[in-house]
Length: 359
Image 1: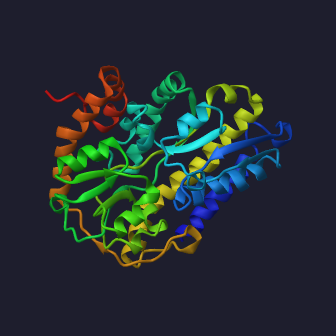
Image 2: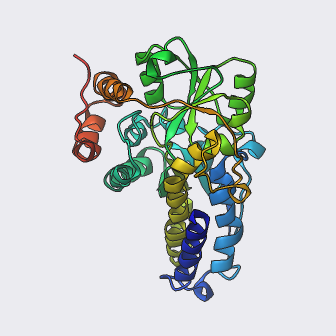
C-alpha cells in the first residue's frame, strides 16, 4: 500500500506542476550542470536523478535539461560543493549541511545531534531557520539555497554487538558532522570523520565499529552486508540542500528561475520529504526482517536480518541530558554570539531549548 500511495502522490504532483506559474512554452531553452549525490545513496538514485533526467525535462517540454554526474563519478566527498558552485564550474549542486558546516558553522543549527526527534518538528525548524541561512549563504558564500529536505532519521549501524547507549563507550564511530562528533565524545565513543563512500570498506576492515547514517540510506548502500546491529536512536536527519550560484542564477530568464524553483520544491523536495517520512520505518523494518517491510527493488531496498537494538527510556533520558549539557553548549561556542542568538529565536523556540556556551 505504501508503494502505491507514494507513486500516486508523485503522479499528482507532476500533474499539478504542469499548471504552475511558468508554462513550458514560455521557457528559454536552458541546460544545467548539476552536482548529484553519491551514486550508492538513495537521494541520488530516487530523488536527484529522476528529477533532473526525467521530471524537469518532461514538465518543461524538453526546454530545460541537465547533466547530473554523481559525487562518486566526480571524485568529490561533499564539502567541495559550495566552492565549485561559487566558481561557476557547476550551475547547481547538492550537499549535506553537516559536510559544509565547517565553512558555515551556522548550518549545524538545523540538525544538532539528538535535538529533533520527529519529522513534523523538523519541518517547522526548516521553515523558521531557512530564511536566516539563505541570507547568510548569499552574503558569505555567494550561493542561493534553492531547496532543502531530510533523509530518514540518522541512526547507528554497527559491525559488532551493542545493547544500548552505554555500549557505545570505546567504539570507533564514523560521523559526518561536528555536532555528531560532540555527542559521540560525550558518550565515550571515538568519532571518526569520513566520506559516505568510504564507510563500507572501513567497516569491513574494522577501521570503525559503527557508523551514523539514515535508516534508508544504510540499506540502499548495502551496509546490511557489513553490519550486524541496527540501533535506531535518532541522532539527526542529514539535511540535504541544493544551491545555485547567486550571480549566474540572477542572469537566468526570470521565467526559468520561477519554473525551476517551483518544480524543485513541489516535485523534487516533496518526493524527498515523503520518502524520508515513510523511509524511517521502512528502512528499519526491511533491514531487520520485520514483516511490515513493503519496500523492495523499486526503492533499491534489500531485505536483511540485522539485530534490532531497542531504544530504551533510559537511553532517551541520557541522550536528552547530553544534548543540553554538551551538544548545545559546543554548538554555541563554535558558532558565536550572533549565530546563537539567531538559533535561539528561531530553532530554539520550536524545540523549546536555549543554546549558550558552557560556563
